[in-house]
Length: 347
Image (cartoon, rainbow, N blue to C red; front, top):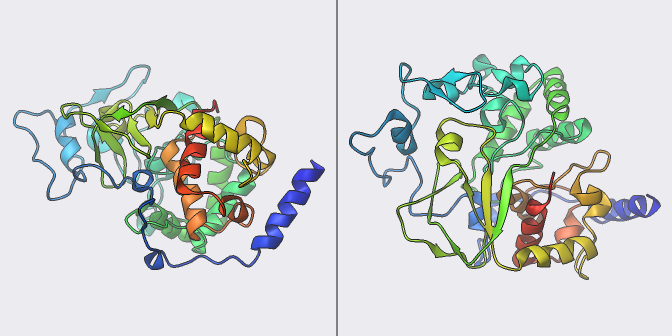
């Protein structure tokens, strides 16, 4: 513990005067991880170039190609869920359907419904009532209360936002965090902290992956009828059950992260030894990356989320006095390998 405290103090000293940088001043080089920000695929769902809804398609199929349909459609059910919802009920800004209320405590109003008058969308819209989150946003289940509150402050104070201007979610978080009262922040933090994060991603090493399409928010969905493509030096992370995740918002539907062959072992070497470029991740994040005190657990989070955080810190759009020097000497490939390893760990 003594060495951890000393190390952290050194990092704080090195980075105490860190400042966020304007995202529009950042140049996108050839190593920019577009895949982590959902900027990949033949088109974005909802864009003008997206194909029209197929003839004779069901409402569930049509929801792939645009916003949820108006109220009055068929009700859907999921295995092990006592609930049934229309698509418009499952995907509702101010009260999205909660498929598995048995997976979490009673949901506070600010989490379940938000506040329509202040245009604060429900926390459960993006993060689910269980806090599991998705690859295109954050995983908040089990986060330490103090860390949760610190991050809300960072969002509100523009000390945390996306290095990629095409990624809108962090800007939305900044707006919401600034509107929440101190009491609402505390309620949300204590609620999500009380819920255990569950395994949510499978890591598969491969050379060949499905082609993908991206939703407006950066969720990647596999194109099953298209020929596969080479993975290259990137990670392609897709919804394992696309309709359940994208349309019905099933929090138990997970993700598959296709990573380059050998990347998990390379990432393990860097994360556990530092490799002469950084320090052991476990010094701060604990054994198995399962958290230590107010430092959050990161094991088993989606690869896209992990990479975005590392990259945003590296670009200076996420202030983290502890993390700044840790990522300073890491290349994009190093971060990809660390990401593959951390995503492969059991929460």
